[in-house]
Length: 182
Image (tube, rainbow, N blue to C red; front, side, top):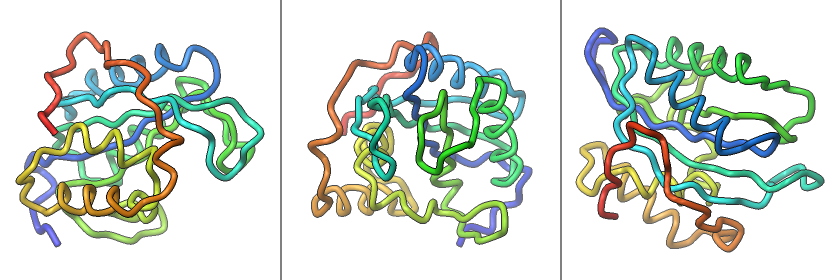
């Protein structure tokens, strides 16, 4: 467990998804909103992947991606920022796993482990979801000190459902850094 004080910068990874409206534009708006927050710096964006819905199947395909950020926010404060961005971009929570304009999930925050009424870290289902792991594998560098890289690639080696995750396009966010060479 990471005991880094919350005031220090830590790297966090989030998953982004959308299946209503202009999916790509909404994801780019979410990234821009994150970058505009004074305590968040977006470092790397994955490719965009079109993915089959999971859970509730009677809905359009998603576009999913992941990003790496540096932040001084503690994980619950970061989650609050993410939930606010979802609301501003039209997110409505009516059907569990249902259609949405945007979904932002905090996956990993500086290697911290926590389980509160608001947040569980690492994300409890991320290692079971190809639509999370495939984009995440684009941006988590080999040798990442917490072992996340190895966990992602180990899970991808054994995970079913990867055929439901199809490369869609390269991220076009204006400040996107070069992808890692994974």
